[in-house]
Image (cartoon, rainbow, N blue to C red; front, side, top):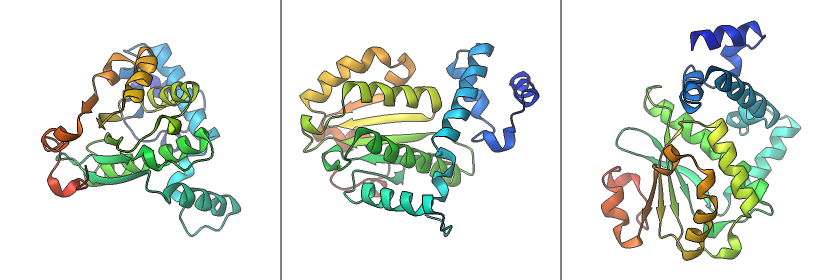
Length: 231
């Protein structure tokens, strides 16, 4: 990792400002299975993606800064937040924040808008974990409750593949567990289509839970007070 830091600095990267945290290089290195060239490319791509997508500005959307972009993004996020489809709530026993999703409440006019909202909440979940654990952990959990979900609310296959690509390429080793509660037959079909595009390590982190076993399964990871009663 020190070698990678030296190379990046030599190429003009300001690591203190452009890396998300001191462990970013190590996560990409492990995600690329120790291949130095691939790691270097992966880090550069993530830095560029975060800058082009303005991801680094997400923590400041609701600041008092009155820039026009901020005002527009505030309105966008308030609309996306309005149905309670995706938010950060609760911590597991080790202090990891939880991204909670209710797909039945989807209100986005486009798949791109929906995914931007998810990215905003991923960034919040990571920040909450770091704050709760004083920087000791950098991962988060996901709980997706599919109750009432209809196939008409599903994103396209291309959008799903693109979202998976972004998650795997730009958030390596960020996901701790993804708990999918009460999955529908359609979601199982969609899973079969996208499964080949998910790396084995990520697949091992996904847990399917029938509704009647939700509490008995999640209680191994969470205290009751950290979970919604309907889950």
